[in-house]
Amino acid sequence: MTATAPAAGTGPRAYAAVDLGASSGRVMVGRVGRDLLELTEAHRFPNRPVRLPEGLRWDVLGLYAGVLDGLRAAGALCGGRLDSVGIDSWAVDYGLLDADGALLGNPVHYRDARTEGVAEKVWASVPADELYAATGLQYAPFNTLYQLAAARGTAQLAAAERLLLIPDLLAYWLTGEQGTELTNASTTQLIDPRTGDWARGVADRLGVDLGLFAPLRRPGDPAGALRAELLAELGLTGPVPLTTVGSHDTASAVAAVPAADERFAYICTGTWSLAGLELDAPVLTEASRAANFTNELGLDGTVRHLRNIMGLWLLQECCRAWGDPDLGELLREAAGVPALRSVVDAGDAAFLAPGRMPERIAAACRDAGQPVPESRAEITRCILDSLALAHRRAVAEAQALADHPVDVVHIVGGGTRNALLCQLTADACGLPVVAGPAEAAALGNVLVQARAQGLVGDRAEMRRLLARTQPLERYEPRGDRAAWRAAEDRLAGR
Image (cartoon, rainbow, N blue to C red; front, side, top):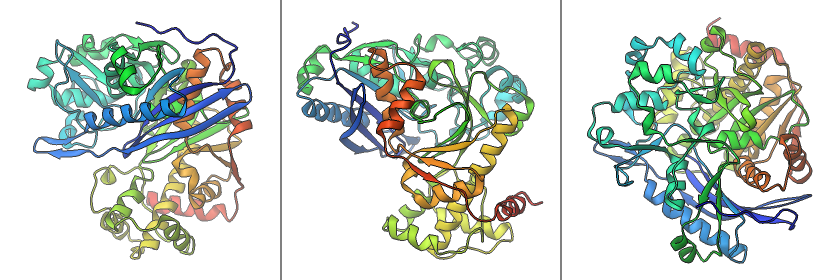
């Protein structure tokens, strides 16, 4: 069933954005009109992975319950009427369904150890350079392709009739309809970014059954309507359409970058930092592969040419180890620590797994012959300096690889609330930084829904609306750029 959207020209509308991150989920209500873009949090809930005897798993049933609670709260904020719902989440992970459409176990967490050593086995059939030329995706041990290779021969995969990426799985439970959203599918390493279709040659050579995947959908496509029994349970007046958005949260976040023109870089900050450019075509050169840049698909056929950086995960894990101290006080103390005393490679896979992060950062500094940060403030400053340095490298290399110069860096996502990180990034890049919006993924989600109903126009109009309505903070570069070059050289062993 496909719900009928409200008629155009009926004034401001209310959209629910389900936005799931690696540590929490939220349902936001976006109200959109000609000069109106307001976001209200309806419900926030934790996302707590569970370590089972067989490995690390997502509690996807808990997430679904949080989504339902959020939609109920969203409806209460809007008098029981939502004009549409959209879902975005992290990438690469999936659920398997049997022939009856029932879930076969909890989805595996991308930080699970099952993919260790798997990439080398895949490359024996399709060498890494050929894989990059066909899919444009950077090497990451948790890419869906490697997860499927690791699952080969398991009872679950043998019994599976359908594979749904996390947002598509939740959409199926809400509507009963199955699809595979393209921006998220482009992170599987099974999509050709030039065509926006499956890389069938790669799948054939690796024995991946593309019949497991539901038909591709693109942002703006209809994705069914909330099931009638859910409407009653959630107190909603139907029909409530589900609209396909950029279901990879980074795709939605980049759609919400309030850029004035094309000469910008972006850094989507949160658990990860995703730093790069929005392009019209992928960069599939050997130099791009060697630099570990990825080509993921975005809104309107654009390409997100970016590098994955470990991000605020480093600080989140340290704070967890420290008993969750007051973050504001910690950042104030870190601001007083001498700059660039010690730095680590924020893209190093050694920091991927959870646990003992302060000790691992100290050990990395010790092994590199640098001063070892000891206090919480020193470790925090090391992390923020290292992230800014990684942002600097990614922005500079992206421009060179794509021959696409930029005049400004836009930081969106949770890191916009970290003024020290924003200023350090401006200093390191030697470019102005515009920080905001913080809830970029939810805003991008909402705007794609609104655009599908004719309420806003193209990407440029979406971005003008964001710039007019959202609070933004500008940071000018300051200090000596030579110090950043020296730190970069030190980290590279030059």
